[in-house]
Length: 133
Image 1 (spheres, rainbow, N blue to C red):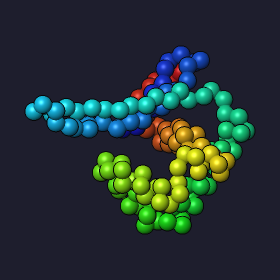
Image 2: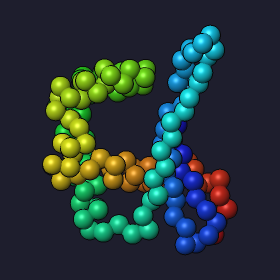
Image 3: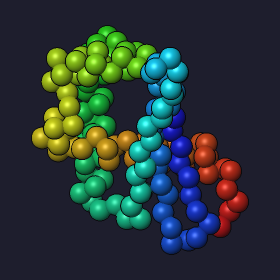
């Protein structure tokens, strides 16, 4: 689940909401379902260093998909199936982690935030639900 929500107040910023829903488990004969949601407040200003970090995130991601297309497809598919242990194991085997991104001048969270904001700017996939300010 991914959503970008905004407020009518001009000084408010967008909150990026990312998460996964529908994790089922049985407990005491009952089926329980849980959701996990993260909220990220989008900054009102992006410094030149932020932009460089975002650019580096995308360079690193592009290299991963270029150099290991099959492994990256398997990793994404495992994660989509909620097999997080397998997807993280694959990432570790390839040497990829948040620390890798940071050590290489990125920080994948910045790339994710920029990607979702850019997606909404280009497609109005979320903000089209809000009247113009």
